[in-house]
Image 1: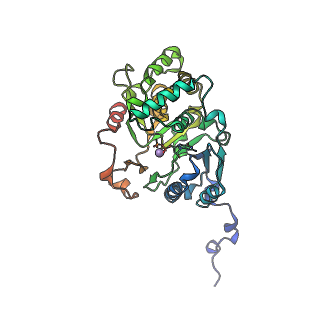
Image 2: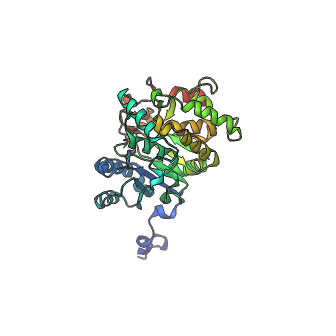
Image 3: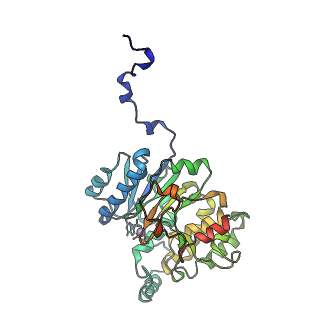
Length: 335
Ligand code: GDP
Ligand code: MN
């Protein structure tokens, strides 16, 4: 008996083809991970989950950044967890240090005082460099320049749900500029003059402030004061064009000149979030409800049964509707 032609298996060349993910449309995107060598083991757990839940199907590259050179051990034990490309970058000194206009003595004094006052990371200088770097520089690092979208990841964070689509392409195709999973209230003591400085910026650069923005997300009185709501920036999926835009650049430089990254302890999370509120409209911001995510002590765990099927987190521990979450605000503004 002759096997009909259509049942003959294709020749073996199938196995020499590029893997499927290389043929499909992909975004120009990467994970970006600022980390220290000492966080290697915490990071390995995170990458393992990220690969299992998402990236083994998509193989987006990783960009690791550090203010010190990465060790060979770090490189070997991170690249070994993924088939994707891994790149290791050193942060240039201008992006991790005092700019020349900062009065270092004043910064030291104020920092020690914030430490004595018991403010979280109050007396920590490297934390301030970190916040300034994440606010103004990671997207300008040479290794990041070829990308259009980023997904920020930190050591120790966890991913609980299978993600069967490409969130970068989702962002691109739907004209989303900023994606988040957890929103919460900032400690006011870390940003005493951030809002005043922001208001001055808005007054001086009205051309950058569109009428149809999301100011109501970050202010309960039409911009009079900041309501302390921010997206938790340890998770972000974003459009790098937004952070490289003239308006974001002007805002960062304005804040940097004002000195609050050092004289106070301005976090990159409120800085990014205020920028989102000032510059973007509702359709450009996306809540990734389907990404179960934890950065201790808070977790976003999708509560719908349909989404739960693909997750391993306890929906009872979902942060979204607790006291210090800003989810209700998000819903009231975007509904
Ligand atoms: P928290 O989440 O606000 O408590 O701050 P983290 O300690 O998690 O720091 C935020 C991110 O910056 C993490 O990815 C850290 O690995 C990274 N980071 C913080 N400080 C430093 C530093 O001094 N050097 C480097 N290379 N990374 C840092
Ligand atoms: Mn962290």
